[in-house]
Length: 263
Image 1 (cartoon, rainbow, N blue to C red):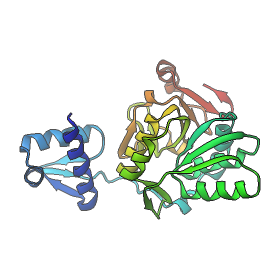
Image 2 (cartoon, rainbow, N blue to C red):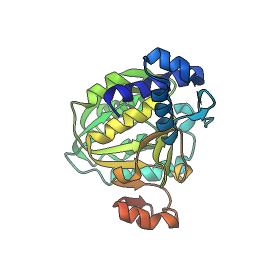
Image 3 (tube, rainbow, N blue to C red):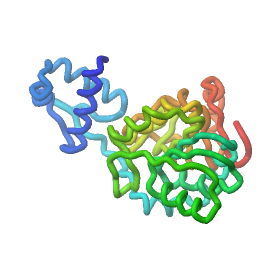
Image 4 (cartoon, helix red, strand yellow):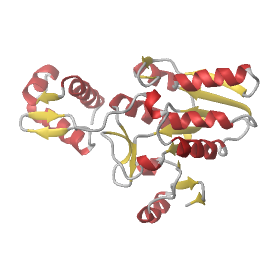
């Protein structure tokens, strides 16, 4: 699809998120394209699990709502601590890493005292605050770069077009990515369309993509696709992979890391 087509699809999703439903005829008039073109757009968005087509248009998927950051911090805390510790073991001195938003990614910061001269790029407001605190007390030896952009106060993160443009200036060694769902069929997914786009941008600027996913995210699909599972290098979880995943993960060269080792 052309760039104009991708922008039109993004605008359709924005309208859908605002209104809950969209109409083919109205979209055709708004974007000054044929109804056939709009139907193709809706077909493609439905295949990407971003909407559900109905007669004359499309509606949003009735999906779970992403809990606010403060609520997510209290969920699966033991699992998140284990994942954070495992993730930190993959960080080497002098690494330039990206830490995504999310309560699981935040746990990595608690395990960086023995790391030297690392640079951290983040879009997470709690991660920024914690890193500054650790740096002040001398527990973090490194640089902090905060990604500017539109602030989401509910989820304590930045995203959007400004944040995406900021990422154009960076290449990182390792990106530690938060997701809302991960499955063999649908890849890694997010509750939020804009966040999914931003996470996709994070992946594109990283040599190694490492997904952090506790057991509540495994074999689950959310509404907005981030990437295929084959685009991921490693998955860190608190549990071993489902047995029927093992062969597929090996074929995709995706490494699974958990508290018992690697699969």
